[in-house]
Image (cartoon, rainbow, N blue to C red; front, side):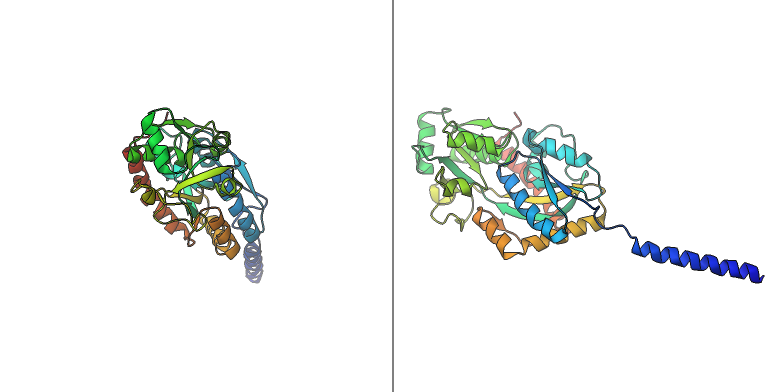
Length: 326
């Protein structure tokens, strides 16, 4: 009997030690090593700029590097497909946009992913209204002049976008409808090549976000901003309401998601790092300088509620505009 009690006590002690060791060896919220952030657009565009800016500050908060993986094409769907199939352990995240989690579901008859079921939320980054941009050599110095030119020669002018289903595509389609003009759409494989052709004068205008560097350098001329109030970064540029195109507003948002099944602990840690980054005064000023509007950090579930609420609104915008995948 004594021997039995002795071994039972030894076993209990051993189990206790293993339990204590297990506490010490608990798995971290995120796997060690670099985190990959998939961006469904080529390098150099507004989405890529947002991704790189937030990745730098989040990496500081996490103590882990974040590597940008640009997978452009198909209106962001190539990158979204890749992110949906990635390992769900927190090692891969994706820059979500109004295209990936809103417009594309309405623009495309079939997607290889479900924007809600195949993803898990992390948080909101920022929102940004579109700006109408023309080359510096353009004869148009106001929205009114551009509209008059399109009506004088229907179908001759064109606008570029980052691809079918991009926010630039939808903005252009909505502008056409509200202004009652006939302009051709030229989709590119990302905003960066569209901007290159715009600066070269091969495209008449682009409606996009994140173009402040081109404006400040004197390479592009802003004609109007698609917001209800003038942007702090462009105080001398009128809104479309002021320019005569009433009710033309765009709100491109950027957030972060992870593959569905990513542990809640990983999502919470990434959300906390995102909030830390967004609360930095320097970070907020950088977004303002880029022509964006800083946001109050959202919790994981709050962000997902926002995404699901705005999806039918985005679909309705697509329906009203008449835009379709080409």
